[in-house]
Image (cartoon, rainbow, N blue to C red; front, side, top):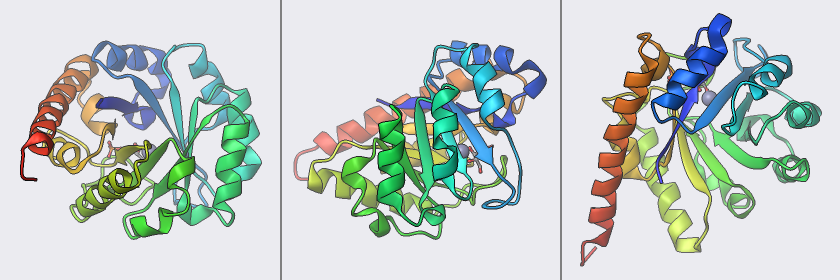
Amino acid sequence: MTELCFSILAADFAHLADDVAKATEGGGTVVHFDVMDGVFVPNISIGPPVLNSLRKATALPIDCHLMIANPDSYIPAFADNGADWVSVQWEACKHLNRTLELIRSHGMKPGVVINPATPVEFLTEVLDIVDHVLVMTVNPGFGGQAFIPSTLKKVERLAQMRQERGLEFRIQVDGGIDHTTVESVVKAGAELLVAGTSVFGRGQAVEDARNLLELARKAELARKAELATPGR
Ligand code: DX5
Ligand code: ZN
């Protein structure tokens, strides 16, 4: 089922709990928490102390997207402060298998993230040990960037690999997801939709989350109908 993972990077940090409540009222079901260290990406965002406060403000799963070098060193801190899902960048991990197992051993759901220039084929050996794969649809580091269309083919290929191998990981997309791009990513096979600017950017998070989800659900129905068409 399609879910909206609203990215709080675009929220008002002085009123974080209020913004989370609004996106939740609009139908969002996962809090996407972007962690940037100024090393792996050229920007700095938020970390465990903010996570700790946020944990007390929402019952939704918190999905931590670690855009950081050396993620292994910080995984215990994310577990201790309330993370439910943790995804790490393929490009930042020397020993990806170990890192994913470390996340699971701390009781969290592991995910792997690939940048737009990283091929999905590089994930072959970990697809059976992750809960979700995040295909970046922009280069990580900033909110509000334009969607990169070539990433759609990667989502399609990943959905195909999942079907061929009978696996169950979910496909997440992140970056530039709005009313103009949501249909194409859902039709390609994404079911976890990260959106920041299109949810919080206009100061109408309830309405904008609701409208985005409605478009996503329509596209999901269209995809299901297409897959069910005989002769495919
Ligand atoms: C980008 C982050 C995203 C970001 C998406 O590096 O990983 O989660 O918040 O922002 P929008 O939806 O504004 O493209
Ligand atoms: Zn993100």
